[in-house]
Image 1: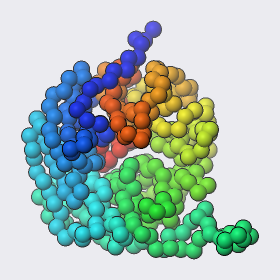
Image 2 (image 1 turned 180 degrees about the vertical axis):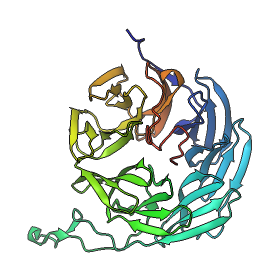
Image 3 (image 1 turned 90 degrees about the horizontal axis):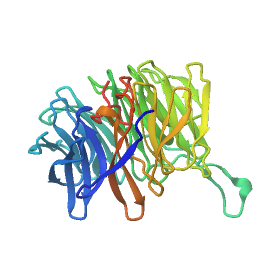
Length: 399
């Protein structure tokens, strides 16, 4: 019999949100929020706090190949060394007052960053060298937004209902999860109108900044790298519930009536932990096949999902409905541990020795989150193109 799974709360001086690690041996880096600012913590796999450092509250925690930990501070890229010492601060030149640094990716010799704006004045992606000097900057077109599920009608006249005419967005922000992805020589940047949730994704050439293609406007959903130069792009909301596979030239080569967080294994197989804004839940674990068919797993009770993350033995772990669960390649779901009253939405890391790291909350109104380790019998993290949210433990989705 495998050892029983244990769930251990790790006490940190703040509410842990973003997580990353340089590798399976740790430490885990946690960006924590406090009333007086942010705190970056390094936690060993035994739960001991290695160090903590006060930082300005930021997001998009990522670990560079040299071990530097990077995050955003409004319009600045900030680095902390692996020993907790302060590193570089890079403030890109030429940003407009209404522009906000929404996402970044660490590249060889520099960064790729995506800028949104509120109020809307435009969106762009730019590439920077290691000192923050601009290599290229590309303004991206945003057509009038519309979608068949967004409707309008005259007051008191249901018969006049029709799709809303295209509108100019009031803001265009970078979509939070996987808002900027790089696969080979292709980058995918996703922006959305915060008043409607309708957005679109742009693909660019990483080397030159050339704008290559744009998706139609749609309710934004989850995205992932599918392979060299190809991406999964999801749509969820306004009666949309679908996942599309886009090739490097912007063609939709496959589409499934499913949406959620994909996992792509080292064998090229794709599973999705579905996410839908419907209660009671209709979401399932599904396998997406290359003939556009699907294999259905059981319905997953609950609403919020932490993870998932894929191990090399074919099991995927996730937390949902107060339970830490796994699903095997045949889509059999098993509960490893029950923690009633806890839930969350963030990413999950699979570290050495089957150790899972993630955050949970008991009160969304208060916004307090807590950091947990779960000790399991899972094998090491899978080596596929997309074994967990944000692509790998470093939070650096470059393939």
